[in-house]
Length: 274
Ligand code: ADP
Image (cartoon, rainbow, N blue to C red):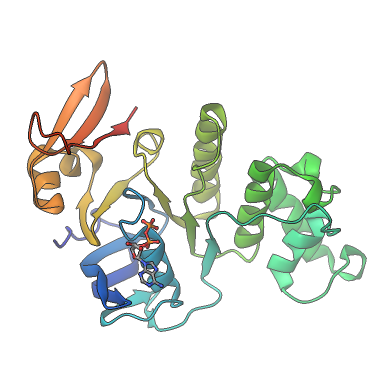
C-alpha cells in the first residue's frame, strides 16, 4: 500500500520507493513506499518480526533491496554523513574504559581518542549534544559503568554528534520503564526541533509516540500503511494491511487493536495506543 505524499510545504528527505527485500527465500518487505520530510518525527510501528529492522537497514544502505530503491537527501545507495543510526540492544561491556564525552566526540570527528587533543569546536559540540540529551552529568563517567538505558541515550548522542539530517532509532523504548519511555520521547522531540533532524523510530507500541509523531508508518508482514494516527489506526486500513479482520477498540481512552474475528481463539490482542 502506498502512502500520501508529504505534509504540505515540507521538503522531502527520504523516499522509500517500492522497496522489496527477500531474506533466505522469504519476502520480508513488499512494495514499501513512503516519504519522510525534513525534520519530521515518524513512528515505524509493528510487532516483532514485521520487518522494522530490515526496513531501517535498507534505508541505511546496509540491506540490499531486491526491488525498488531508497533515496536519502537526493542520493541513492550507501550513505554516510546525513544518517545517524542507533541499532537495537547494543550494550557495552562493564570493563569498557571509554568516557562518555570521548565516545560522543568520536561521533563528531570519528578518529582520535582524547578530548585534550581536540579543538574547541568538537568539545562545544559534545557539550551541546550531551546537554540536549540530558546527559551532562554523565560526561566524565565510563560507558561500561552506566545502565542500559543510559548507554542507549549515549548512543543517541553519538549518532547525533555529526549533525545528521536523519536519525534512525531501532526500538529505543523497548527496555525502558514507562516514565523513561515518556522522558525519552519528549527529549527526542525537543532535539529534533532544535537540530532540525528528522527522526524515524521503530516501536511495537504506538501510544507513547502519539503526542510527538507527525505521521506513522504501520508495518505488518512487511507491508506498510502510513499517514497520521487517525488516518492509519482504523479497522478498514489495518484489516487491509493485515489481510484479515482487525478491530480498533477505544477502551477508556486507550486504542486497542485486536486481530482476528470475534471469538476467534487465535485472536492476538495487541495494545497499540495508551
Ligand atoms: P522486526 O525488526 O520488526 O522485529 P525484522 O526486520 O528483524 O523484524 O525481521 C523481519 C522478518 O525477516 C522476520 O520474520 C525475520 O525472521 C526475518 N529475517 C530477518 N533476518 C533474516 C535473515 N537473515 N534470513 C532470513 N530471514 C530473516
